[in-house]
Length: 195
Image (cartoon, rainbow, N blue to C red):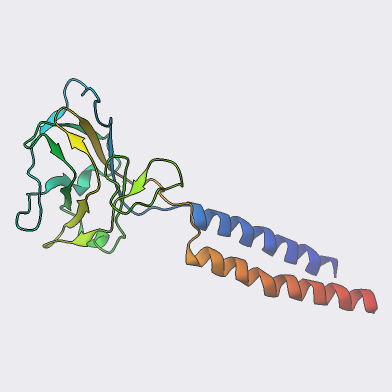
């Protein structure tokens, strides 16, 4: 009976560790667009970024980011206009290998507040929308509700960083699965004590 108790305790420990890990690790690609904010001074060597705003009748060309830079250092861009201020832009991740097209692409920004959802709460980092499949091997993000003035710098990277501390559905299922294990252990322990 002692062996059953040890096995149940080991199973609980293993399930708890797995559940904690599953809720915090996220290996999906993340587009990260951060900036110095209004009035920031660009670093020397930042690439010039020239875009047009898009509205009801005009759509600007997207800024292309190659999937091969996943995990590489961020690239800095200095917004030089026109116009002097933009609140929206497109970014397209291109040349995605077919095996990675099924990945769930995410986006995080402290410049564009597209969804209004901060991750983690009160951090100043916002989810910037859901990737939209583009032609062929690309996905696009529409970034909006931001403020980028001429002379401001943004840093753009593609990483695997975790952007959410919200447990995944699999984590919740694992915790629910602990119920029967605990119930079985109690029943077995109660049966032993009454025997």
